[in-house]
Length: 94
View 1 (cartoon, rainbow, N blue to C red):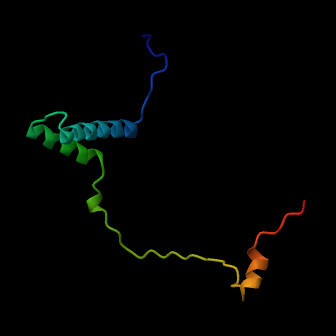
View 2 (view 1 turned 60 degrees about the horizontal axis):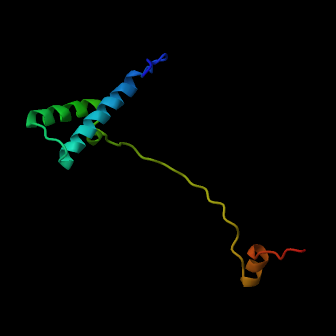
View 3 (view 1 turned 180 degrees about the horizontal axis):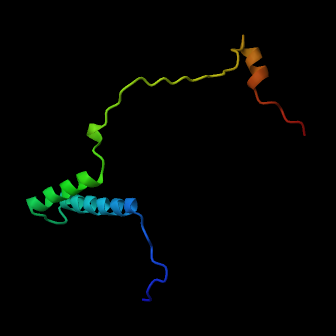
């Protein structure tokens, strides 16, 4: 196989995501029984994963969220005849 002329240059964030993905894949294989790891290797993998991914349990929301929605709906028809005039399909002239 020929060598690459243009080498792929990943930024630091992409490299961190790739490393985290490899750790996750390895732990998934361990859970599924495909591989075996000694307890100290599992502890090390979990420690590295904590460094690579943010810990979402420490995220705290404070303050109020004010969201306003405006809904513009057509006026309610008085009866069925008015509804049919507004929304019934019009016959096509051929």
